[in-house]
Image (tube, rainbow, N blue to C red):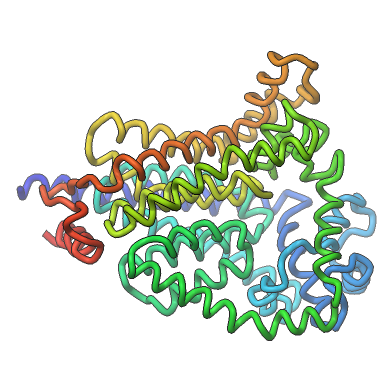
Length: 466
């Protein structure tokens, strides 16, 4: 027993060191890219200028109002491409997002950008540590490798300063807080902030937490209550200065989704050709069915049953430790597929690490499959693979009108939605078939349906202490 504990401790150290190496790569390469790239912190500017516009009692969803602030502040190159300027002046976040972005805009451009950068890096690294912390109860080395891979493949996210880093990180931090039952009030506020900023990133995770056992359900209810209370003043403010904000928001989104637009999922768009690639399932289906009506219906028809099955069995399995984490591992990839998501948003795959570690610790074929699907999802949705893919497929524009050409184009230029779909199927299957089975930890104890959620956490803690 003592030898096993020694080996587990050594693997924990090795796993943490691997994750720390990934964090160092994330910071060093991200900082280096920011020094040479003309688009550094471009996504921060999207939220900054619109929030500044709101502070000056302008309409943050009207391009003309935001453009006025954009020009007066004078931080941008006057000769920049029209598309770049349009991205920064057409706001497409919900009004609740201002809850999070307001402090940065109040600081001004330079101080706000510095604070945004520091918090982005710190929260993503912290979220990776906490995902590893849960997985380390079962397979510390595997958890460290997965966390390191995700961080090393997030340098583009750091460079452009996309808000998804905050939404994802706060969601992961909240899940850890609810599971460990530590800093619960902070966890509730973190999940509320995540939902306020990008509900399309953490909304399905919140739903699965609501459907899980009583401890998680209670925190999910508290989260939505906190979000409602905090959002009321902001929504009233936005509605006052922008009575037609919803119509304007839809128009801004439509301008990007139009044929040839930056988030047009069809073959005529930029999906799969840039580092800000779409990962929603429509970008894969659109190669075969180019009509928006067709690829939207097909995507929902394929993804909705998986989500419903995952939700149903979360209710049934969510009272056990492993049942909850397998459900969250299913929610992470599935949340990316039916609606608008970029590669940055796929960092929510941090939530697959604990479930993967639990399955891997069993040493069977299911565990090996969990590592395969999780690792593939992280890598294919990461920066290194994307760079290689773009370089090798830059000449593939629109496929020839035959199934073979369409299939090759979809597989080569848009593999991210496909692997997310495969990972989602796998983890829904594990919730259905494995969610009620005992999961052994290294000291020989088991966590199963008879133990309950609280006792499962206690056993995991004891395994670390012995």
